Image (cartoon, rainbow, N blue to C red):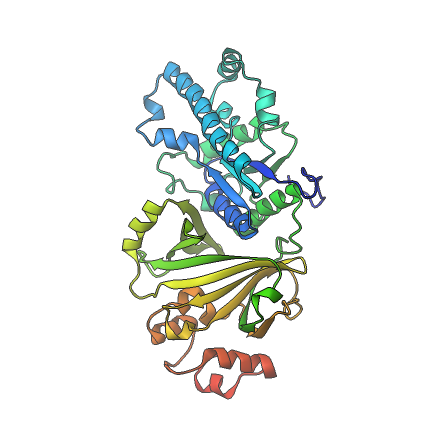
Length: 430
């Protein structure tokens, strides 16, 4: 289990880092969404992130049905699965060796996972037949292993397999498989198990924090369990030469149509120099006060197919996103670009995660802050890109539709005197 102690890092200062990580666990443990969040976090730091796909899903999506296989076919399939997994992994390992930047390689399961689905005698026989050393495979192939415990163990109300077409395990079988997979990796020198004692957002933050600690990355309080996203409206910034080192990305967001208004679905296209990654996020209705969100990396082809479902009530959002570290705290500044809705013209929003109490954050001195807009519905991206002002105001809790009302100035007035401005009161914004 993850503890509060600081483990020894694996790398010397100033050396190029290639960190090989296995994300494993039982069905519906959060690997897909966790992998996406981990990728984005490290890409924002300027790392190159490689994501090794789950070999079993690749093979089984080709028409393989486990129930139709004979015991001999199962053994043969598992043997070829491991060989295929090793070859796919090796492709990414060699790419990372040739890369000039630090690299994080995220393996969706590792070579020990198949042992959870096989009798011990069959596994031992396979190891001997292929001249594989299970201790070497477990302990030396990867730098770190993180087990994401299935939701069926401790969060069964969130358990589902509908997001994976080749999985159909019930909760009881999921718990059994989760235990077997966890046992398969016992003995790895850098092994963390992340359970379901917290909400899912915190679970993902624990996972990211574990990777950062192991590599030796200082992220201050961004990944503390009580950290919260805080947002600030930025009026201006100094010239680029007065900034610390930053990475700038082109970001495009599109909202998609959903079956009902309690769901949100969006696409994100993010990249530099014409090279992009694509993410599909679905936010579902809350369960027991916890928002359920599935976030996964998708291909460019899938991205363009899903764009056909674009919600016509929302504008496409174009941003320049600058990511940087200031006083050991990680920030990102979104600079909205045209074409955009008039309300977003010139808009700049600074975001960070911190456990610091409201009003005590050290905002970068090269930025001029108008006011804090944390938890202000009018500054949620979903509301900002609504084409109709009245819809935006209703969804954000404004009682009147006033097309020319300057919300940014109204919030700045509140920040200045600590009370509602006359313009806020007259327009029903509370």
